[in-house]
Image (cartoon, rainbow, N blue to C red; front, side, top):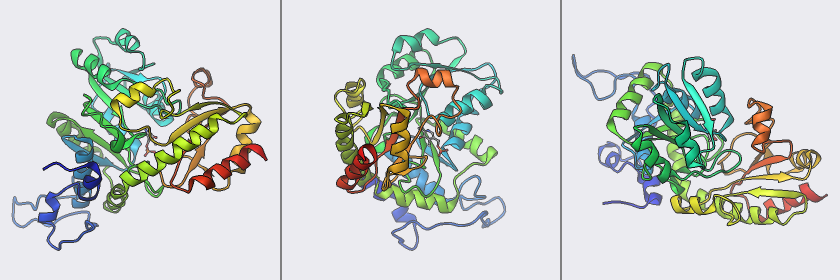
Length: 382
Ligand SMILES: *Cc1c(COP(=O)(O)O)cnc(C)c1O
């Protein structure tokens, strides 16, 4: 029997209902580092929590189900997941990445992976010819965010998947911005899906987490070996927080998206707002492609205001919306990408993308829409 995603978020791993001995409705936190063996050469299935822990395993099964993956592996943060992912490659390997990415991803590519001999080229992946032109005999992967952070560029995942498959290249998609509720890249042909679980999946701005969802057994075995060896698996307590957060993913995503669309339309009407980037607006350049591959537009909005003064004034005057890094949680947060998420991106590259002193990014939460509108209005106009 197959279930809707709303039901899967609650009961994702139906198997555990039969095997959990107490019938606990909330899956228990197995706060243990190690497990006793029933006999010599025997195992309960659990030996040591770096390899696997029942609470983490429960979470991994739920996330794999939501993304239609073969398996999911849970990490202590999104960047820990990216770091483990990049251990798939060796010196001389080449990766093509979207040219607008989460700043921490650009930092790990440029400062950690490059030092280890992995060459990453950043291209506009919404332009398929740009991808094809950059493929070399050493290209092992294409790494995509769609929509991108913070400019909300959209890449056609089905089309890129065809290019990847015909060249024997892995397609990796960071699906943090839409979450599995709105987009399932594996169904569209991706080999690996990455999540910062800190964001929508956790949903409450209370813990860090990351995921790799693998489309097949070979990749699963490789990533399991890497997590067991390098040790960045998610702790039992944090795994439980993620299980708890995921239960309300669908209603949070719907509400946050509903609020975001109202705010995006309102922002478009304001004199001091020069452009609004939200994939749910028909005026957005990626609107059609996003609509063809995702069931929603999420709740991330970026916008350019008329001046640096206006940008800093908004950040200082918002009362309900808070000026903080991160996104995807129930609380609305505003960031200044230039100074926060993208501070480490070289100025020239940053500005060419539009990440300048006039750009703000808003992660819309579940507050009452009138309070959000009033808050933005007083910050913009008073
Ligand atoms: C936050 C984020 C990451 C990194 O995740 P952490 O949990 O902060 O380590 C990666 N990709 C995207 C799109 C993000 O927003």
